[in-house]
Length: 355
Image 1 (tube, one colour):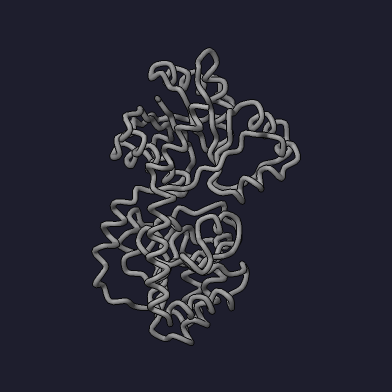
Image 2 (image 1 turned 90 degrees about the vertical axis):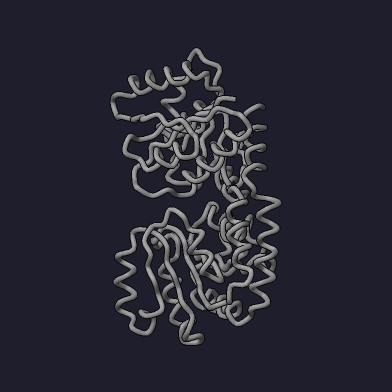
């Protein structure tokens, strides 16, 4: 099949949906499918896509000029005999619907979160008339979309989990077998209140008081506000490290013992799969799609959101239980390999496209 991903998201980071598209595209190419990606000319996606053998097309979505953008896209679809499009943004989806006129081409939208779906003509038209299906990464997000009255009867909301190429993570994990265990906790993701970073920092005061040699590493962008928050808390300032955004998180996971994800809202999280593949147990909020990935008591510990005390208690328990860290890490590795390897996800994706 010939598949085109479209992602015109602004920004310099590669987040969940972007990583999903790149990982999936690479896996599809290995199975001899043609894969392209259309996105902004200045997007960091271009370098990453081309590095992974994905043909990149500079593409703009311009207000008031949609007909010209659709014409440009129609040319790409026709020239490369594209069978299926997978978009991220709703505007991309509407332009794709115009572009595929006269062509045999399916359209799917991938959403990592509910976002700002509204009961407007534009959103209703996009999701019920312009697509052949909506792809989400968790059962919780599928249920959330189905809870919208005008979408509840839509039998085209499909769950396809986040996936990664397990091999490099397995290699990195194997190199750590004789690595001495420390007391290092890591958060990887956007540094924002929606992700519960303020909850994590409040819990860290409790953790650091109980385990003075514990270290917290925050990997992600938009860190300035939280850096100031930490600097105003001298009791924890020396135990918290900010790294900024990191393209390759494997070295940072390698130095850690536990991944923490204290989100207030979460459709899923590819970092959960990456941590499990590296043999790291997870402490995360019992919310949204997280329970689809983390098995409470087996591959990690789930805690109520908005509770610094519960988060601290779970992290202190694991840091004080090296054997538990090891066993949960091994269980997570097995789960990542059996459920979230990108080759398995690619087969699920192709099955959907061929329906």
